[in-house]
Image (tube, rainbow, N blue to C red; front, side, top):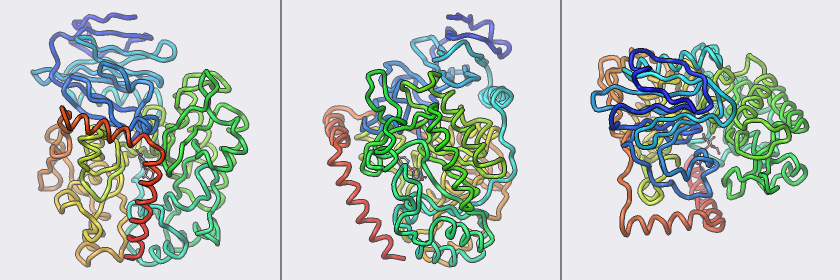
Length: 520
Ligand code: 9PG
C-alpha cells in the first residue's frame, strides 16, 4: 500500500504505480463523484455519504458492479473524486482495467484487482483534471478514430419487441428522405438471446432486411447481445459448459431480463471465441455494418474462467476479438458495457441508462431507489456526469423524442434530451414518422442537420447557440426513503426479486406493446 501525503500532489498531478494507493484528504469533502461500472450504472456527484442499495437485487449483475454493491463505504469503478468547500477537486483515476476507488472517512484510496497499475492523481480545477486524466487514458488504451457519428434511427424506443418484417419495411419507407445515416434494427428479430438467427417474424431473413435498409441509401444497423444467453436458449441448453461458473461450480447470474434468468459466456474458452468470431462475421455477411452490441457486462462478471485472468482484461480481449471479426470499417457501438475496457476498441459507448417516454417513476426512484432503471431523468443524470469521456470515443446519450402523441415527457423535458444529444454530438431517435405532427417532423429534420455552437458555462449549464440550458433538474438524487415508505420500498423490492412477478410484469408489458402497435 502506497500512502501519499496530500502535499505531494497539491502542486502538480502525478502518475503513480501501485496495487493499492491511499491519499489523506486535507479537509472534509462536500461532494463525492461516484463512477458506476457500466453504461447504465449511476455516475454522479452526490453527498459524501453512501446511498441506499438499489433494488431489486436480482438486477444487480446487469445494473452495477455486483462485486461492490454491499460495500458500506463510497465506491466507484476505476476513478473517484471529491470536491472541497472552495470548489477544488481531488481526482484519483486508474489507467488500467480491474480497479476501483473508494472514500472512507478522510481517505481516498485506489485498489487494483490485478497487479500493480498506474494511477493518475491530481488536485485543482475539475474540468482541467478530468481532461488530463482522459488524455492519459487515451495514451494508454487508445482512442477511437473520430469521424462524425452517424445519425441513427433505432427501432427500440417506439416499437420495442413488437417489430416484424412488414412493419419495419413500412417504417423504412415512411422515413422518406429524413437525414439518417443508419437504420438500426433493435431487439426482437432473433430466435432467442443466444440464438442469433431471424425468428418467424422475419421470414425473408436478415440478409434481405439489411438489403432493404441499404436500398434506402443508408447503412444497416443491428442489435445483439453476444456475450449472454437466456436459460431457455438453444445455445445454453446445448453448450452449458461454455458458460461462466463460480468457484462452487454454479452458473454465475448475469441478471434477469426477457422474463428469464441470464447467463454469461466464458470468452476465454477457445470454443466460445470461435463461435463469437463466426457470429460477428455472419452479421457482417448479412450486410450490417453498424453493430450495437449490448449486455456486454456479461463478459466481465466475476467467475472461474477457462483461462484465469482478471475479469475486465478478459472482457477487453473479447471486445478486441469482436472488433477484429467485424473489421475496422464497421461502426461498433457498445452498450451495457463496463466503460474503461471499451476505450480504444469501440467507436461509440452508451454512457447512461435507457431513456423512456416518461421522466421518472415514483416506484423506481423512491421505493426501489434505482437510478439505473430506464427513465429519462436517470439517463440525463448519468450522461451529464460522463461528458468528460468524449475525447475517447463517441458518447451515446441514447435516443431523443420529438413525437408527443405516445409520449408523457413535457416539451421542456424532450428539449433537454435533444440539447444533450447536441452536446454529445450523437443523434438518434426511434420516433415513427406516422406519429409525428408536421411541425415535429420539421423539428426532427432540423435537429439532425444542426451543428450548434456549444459552450459549457458550469458543471450543469451550457450555452447552445444563443440559449442557456440548465440540466440541474435531472442531476439530483431522490430523497432517501424513511419510515413507512422505506418499509413499503423493501416490500416492493422483495416482490421485484420474484420470478413470477417479473414474468407477470413482462406479460403486462407485452399487452401494452400490442396496443402501441395497433396505433400505427
Ligand atoms: C433491448 C434494449 C435496448 C436498449 C438497451 C437495453 O436495467 N435493465 O433492466 C435494463 C434492461 C434493458 C435495457 C437496459 C437496462 O436496454 O440499453 O437500448 O437495446 O436493451 O432489449
